[in-house]
Amino acid sequence: MTSRERLMAAITGEPPDRVPVKIWALNKKTVAKHPSYQPIIDAGLKMTDLVGNWRMNRGWFLSAVEPESHTEERPAQREEWIEVATTYETPEGPLTCSALRNIHGKPGYRAEHMIKSKDDWRKILSVPYEPIREDCSGFAQTDAQMGDDGIVMVSTGGHPLYSVNMHIGSELFAIWSIEERAFIHEMLDEMLRRQMDYLKWILGQGVRAVFSYVGPELCIPPLQSVRDFHEFVVDYDRRFIDLIHDAGGWVWCHSHGNMDPVLEGFMEMGVDCLNPCEPPPIGSTTLADLRRRAGDRMTLEGNIEKHDLLTETPDAIRQKVRQAIREGAPGGRFILCPTTGFMEWPTCEPKVVENWIAYMAAGREYGRYPVD
Image 1 (cartoon, rainbow, N blue to C red):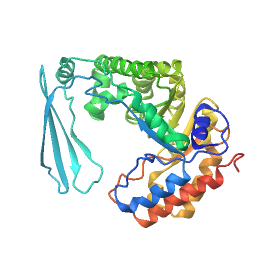
Image 2: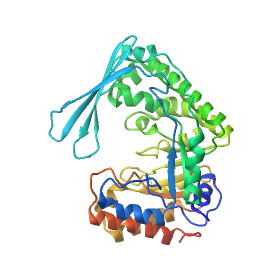
Image 3: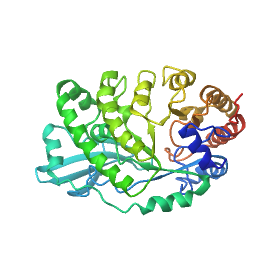
Image 4: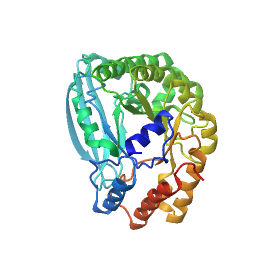
């Protein structure tokens, strides 16, 4: 099979010739953040099944109308960090938020969330909403450039829960889930309406692909309850997932954390492929158990913890790959993948490069069907 055929077989439940081997965020357009990452990119382009991404401009809260804004940088309280503060001028008054940027390229942090009160949400709604109507021909071009080397996934434009939570923060979201539950639904309803507009436009332009999104991880135990997950995620996601399925597309979802209490919820909402299915101790159950419960209803992707690639030996990585394939591959609906990308840190140590090479080689060696 070509990489495109192999990935689509695994996602749609058809038998692939071998387990697809994937590196998160690696595709033909990937540029090394630092020369130390280049060996991983070079090997990955030859040894893995590539996944690219395409999306329209998502605008400001999925609207083509964006308020005037200005940004300023100022010293943060800690060395190596710069605070980047942004102010949006809305008809109902200013909205402020800020983030911490590391001067050496390390992962950043949110310092101040945009929504700190109900009034802040009203300010967002005071900006006129206009559905995004951009040209979608870029998808066909990107897909053609990928060719048989892989697939191109299309962004759903966001996720109702994620679009709300990322601007509130998990602490205030948790408080409002008790004290202001109806208000959370009001925000989720509005973001779902905008996302449905966004998706209807893309699907109406003839885009048929695997659609990708992130966000449910912000509403699973221990952050929120299983009840919250079903009320704030499952009941909303199933509506835009049904829209995609009715148009002939598929859905890939990224959700870190413990899938044990919420796995059936992902199947209920209709997710076709769930990533990254983390092993213990991040998850509380094995990939074999997730495979048994998912059966042939959903593809599982991932199970190789990024931390292990940073700290283990090549031999240990090979054994973890072999175990993941043994547990996840029976039935064919499995894609081998680390739990996150490979260039989050400024540089890459030689031992980490060795582990990534071992991961790719082991996936190719152990992944042929029938798996051992």
